[in-house]
Image (cartoon, helix red, strand yellow):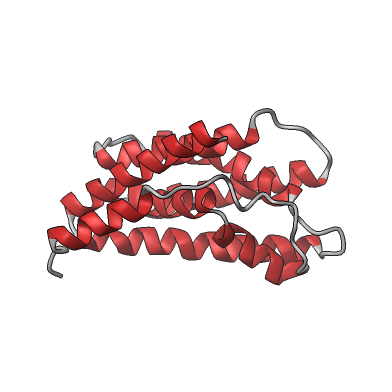
Length: 191
């Protein structure tokens, strides 16, 4: 596959710079169950960028990390959702989510290689906060199982988009990582 034209790469990076506040956490969901869970990761730029970044970074790592890092993210995300459902508290959730966008973007931009276990641990640490936010936003009337299935499916699709996005070429991937990192910085300072 041919690498992206520089103009397209810059346009992609520029779009990443328009990070708003964590719009997935508005508390105004009206759908319930599976549909609400499926929509939640797609409605906030913070979740969207972090989950795509997990796929991009896993693809950069290659080998076992290609599936192990996203799997660790999904597993820990479910645990975070469970913690929220049980009423447990996690401190600084929004900050941790914004930090995940920044750190994952920097890892992609700098092509940082980590061992598979370290990558899984990092992804799982961030995923706990993402899952917690998902769990907090579950509508009261929603089926917890349906809601969880929805946000897991959306997350897997976003990881897959990140993995597929690696096909844009090494430099374009690094530039996308830089755009993701800048978006994470914007999220930190806007929150």
